[in-house]
Image 1 (cartoon, rainbow, N blue to C red):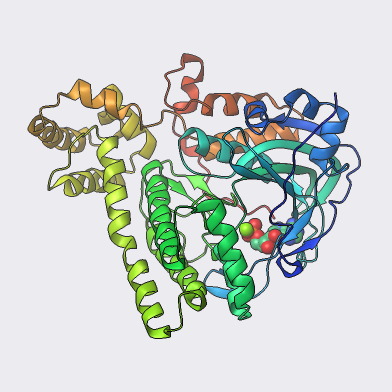
Image 2: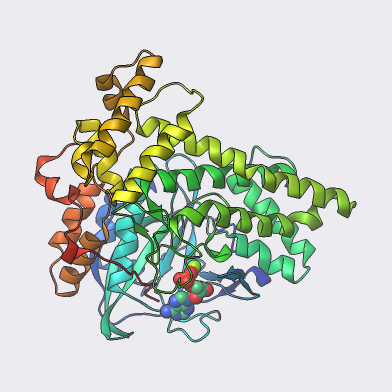
Length: 479
Ligand code: AMP
Ligand code: MG
């Protein structure tokens, strides 16, 4: 079987200053660790061919399929608030773009594929841990209905990567509607390269916001999408961990799964990332950070927004100021659904905040309280169950106000409150086993997370919160 891929590489056709052309660096002994067959089929690729030597060679970067035009994309970005004028794919190459079966353009990118002109001090490689982590979590996010980059495959390289230890190397094949970041716009804005900005804007508009017709509309659509995305993260207890502008996708996808994590015990100040020492990217800060990132994005578009600088600034500022209301509405919609409300009433936000406040005070497990609500078992998640009981009284009264009984609310909430999330301790357990040569826990976790809302008896153990000894407190970028 031969691997035929109908590439159409629109980003590679942009001028040279958008990217560096280079091939991935070959690896010694590629071995397929994971293949996302459904995604392969959705991309029009033959899953079987991807498991054969020719396919694995491509997924490892050892062979280039016909039509691929590998490039590393350049971008800039604010990292923890400080502007870095040049970043870029330091350990990734975009092989090219294909149209999926819905006619949507999708990037196929290898991550961990060797050094590029943007590697700085890095080795261009990834080790198995972060590769599997991104595979598990990005696919879980997709199954949870969150816009995200996807994972097509993971390949072990047969090489060692040197971090704090000697670790097995791996390459992830990432699929995404694009890899265009706020930082990509910043790269050209910082250089006052208005021609490139205009090309990038046109390119991004066509790919992500074809319904918009002006830079202002494009900006407003981007802001609205980001507001909805962050509300989804919040409703799942997801903490991205490194919301730098280079990790902020202009199309409103979740991108760059580094030290990300789902919270176990609910607390708004939760931080996992070992490099986030001041909690800049804590759970509760995510909406504000999004505003900050979007303000950077808005400022890159100013040169495209007409001759009158003052009115451009005014319009862009007003657009950014729309975020809080858009976000609040999206947040409320998500959390209303989580407690099974169909209608919007005054006081709903306060009702939800009261529950969250009690969860925070008692360290209740975020996911289990809401899945417990569905099953009538939420009170078990509270150290002092009366805290739940008194809230549940108000909740029942609120349901009655819209003529809903508890059972109906529970059935509705079951569609949005997952039973299973990729809990840190489970992800780490799967990685540890994989490093030791056992892929079974990784595969089991992926299967269990592919349908996170369904009751599946054999995966009941994966619903459990970590025991005190299992609790993971810090996550790492893994770079
Ligand atoms: P991240 O924190 O993963 O978003 O990465 C920030 C920047 O560092 C990006 O430009 C990456 O391409 C680059 N980078 C991360 N890890 C490596 C690595 N092992 N080798 C080269 N570049 C890297
Ligand atoms: Mg990044």
